[in-house]
Length: 256
Image (tube, rainbow, N blue to C red; front, top):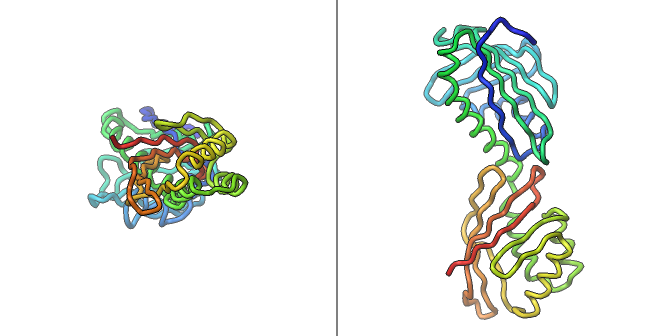
């Protein structure tokens, strides 16, 4: 809705999660605090109170102006101490749209003056990066299990069983690239693994150490062992995970 605030900060980011998942972080205190700071709260209804407590101790208060699940949140934004923005002195609008299998988030923050607007540009750049990460962390809470399932599938000798295992964790058009593989689609991948098992029947792939995850990209170190337990190869695999927690693409990097 129109406001008398003439100076606008806008920022658009892409988040690898569905709008329904993203919107959850506007609906309860724990998720709200996960991207603002401990002690931050929100009452998700028109007129409900918004509290933001930054890690440096700064506090913001406001009121929910509009909330439409799972598409739109509007709230007023002002500092408890009264500066640089008094209570009710600015307004934040967050809009969510489906985009490319994820969510396009568009932020608009309206201010009374240009100086205050400019002072908040870097803050929102940081805050939305934190937000994208905490949302992706929830979507990919079981990413380690997905990675382990991928490596285990390379040891399944029965084609139908292997296909079922991969279908449970990967998209039908999953792509795979490594030093010896260049395949697109689940059927091609299943056949590629057939060949790997034929030429290297006693090799087993295992994750080594914890995964590293950032906004839908997962890195996992691996080791290939043979029946006597000796390592024959090692490397790092890069997984791209979609908005529903399923594997979209895989790139395997081998250590020299």
